[in-house]
Image (tube, rainbow, N blue to C red; front, top):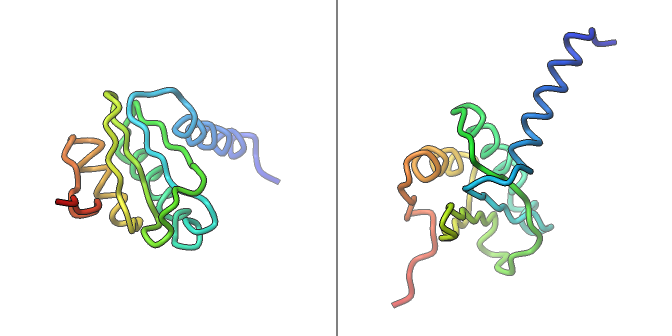
Length: 121
């Protein structure tokens, strides 16, 4: 059995994680978590986003899951939607790429172009 202090620490940690996923905030991170996304590694990508955001004590970020985005060959797919509604779609995400997106895009406003789809010209 856990002590009251251990249970309270687990409760606080869980509430903090839930808060990152559900609060209405200015930046949204939406991760494709349909069967294809999960099979491609979306769960570890979501965990990496949550861990990196918490590690860097970044606020005003809403992390959520969505169903099928429709382009299975590009999974895991992550959309970052800024406070103005501008959407950046990242493809073939990994936990390492997720950490870089948090540092560069979420914290510093610089899109990681190398992880997005190339523009059609």
